Image 1 (cartoon, rainbow, N blue to C red):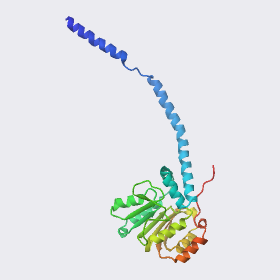
Image 2: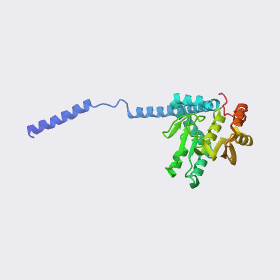
Image 3: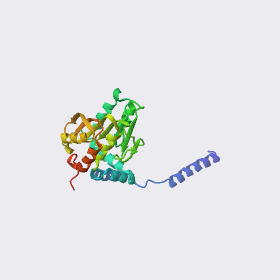
Image 4: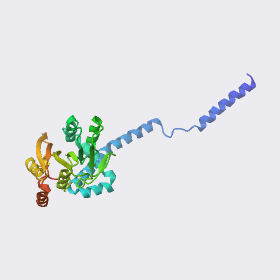
Length: 273
């Protein structure tokens, strides 16, 4: 064999040996890594129920906060603690999965109808603002205002529902879908009557266990809302439609002064664990 060829082969072999020597050796044997991976999965599986329970407890605490605070306080709380509103709605979505139907879906289906195409809508206590999003998929030019005390999505306007940035008689349809939660919800009814045009519509969905229906309907009449339709989703929710009229302000002030809100809508509270 030619000497130069022999030397080049030797050089190549030497480089390969050097490369092998300096190559990074696996820090663990494959079966050891598999053992570690299985152990991690077992640990995660054990932690998952605890994590779910923690999130559930967080939701219950925030939910009770909303039911036992006035809207001004809740508005300020969520303004100061922005991530908490997302925490609340993460828990809320888990609750929705247990329901036969989400009441807001009934309102969405109704409001997609052509007869409402020119109507101005205010969704009061809108959450993630899904009503506006879904209706605008159907008709992008609809005029809809989505308000809540916290803000998740960009189109939602963060506001105290007792003090809305809307003119008197400027809205055709107002909606409270499971959102009459604050201790001052009577102020929210009053504000809805202020922004609604005469003969405007108020859609209300509420948890059945919170109210006695005839008593609640009577209360709304005092605030300028005449019953048009009342339905029920199994035993879970009442779904109601009212027509607005301008109530006597002096009488309304008297009602506000004399009425205990808890007599008409019982706040949802949880047993201490």
